[in-house]
Image (cartoon, rainbow, N blue to C red; front, side):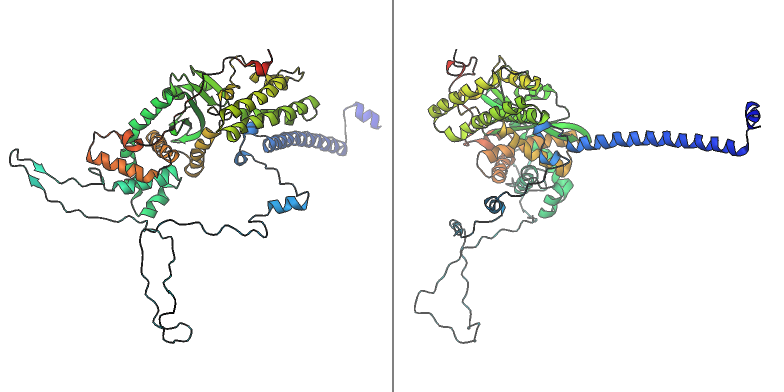
Length: 496
């Protein structure tokens, strides 16, 4: 009977319900499988993102999503080394001398003993005591009113007004206020709102004064760029910078104590060309291809190559060849980068040590290797243009690019604080002010005082040479090289 009903296509309701329930369950299983696959893919991406370093071994700790924990100390000596403060039993060095005081204040003696109220008399010994204390002047700006009598010329009948020193025509703020505020904002990295509140001045008016002064100082940056362009050695680096909500870059170029900043909305080589153009000296940088236009000799940073060698080992943990290569080349590169600090004052000793380290480096990078990552790393040192060997010239040419990376750090910090500039004009103003103030700082003078005096000279005479007013008499320490670029490796290194 059941077979006859099935053959006739007749099913009971219970059978039909079971088939429907099985179909729904199969659909749910297929849906859950798709969701599971999607979640697995998302989890895999999250894990990779957490472990990856966006800029390889050059990734700063702030840009890493997951930072490794510091391992526990293996012994008591290591634990004590990590403890902050002075070592137990250290006597210390005492207070540093404060120098000659600028003013002296006589403090009257008390009228009676503070303990018992008794009468005080002069002691049998010299009772005069001195104590030097560091004090500060009030930081708030204040209003000063000048009264000046207007006169008329008897011959031409024109009015003649007395020139007020220390302030530019049509400006509400004295040069001292502008110089100090610009130093706090562009050099010390203090936000403009904090600067304006600290001085007690209007923020908008202060930013307007910055815009006016930046136009006065712009020829100074242009002239500094010309000097860098004609120098024998220069360095460069760049960092991200936002301009009016757009992604941009801040560039820094250095020659001696001259530091030039440029904020642009692009990382194209056209920006660097506008600063160093037909530069024919030795230019130190990372391996960014945007500097390939340099007509002179490029010099690659060995610190970046050291990180790349470490990355070769980390990317291939199972390869003994990669581990052996990294263990061999990393200490040599670290030694080369320390030569300048150890033998900087003795060029002959530097030369001997450089040739010795160079010979060992040459041997490592010319060994036969099978792993493609090692071969790629070795090819950078085998480059016919010798862009990784210019440190052989002498201590005047560093093997790393740390100086420009240190100079680009302030603008990277400013990016995290202010998130960039609100306009193209503001970005250009930042580049001008930072160029002037960081150069003054590198020359070892007080940037605020020097800028104030230069603005005072300009206020008195519009024809003032601002480059001379700012940097006149200062040692710009422009690099002088003992020899030209390395075009061929010496026999002491190659053995040929």
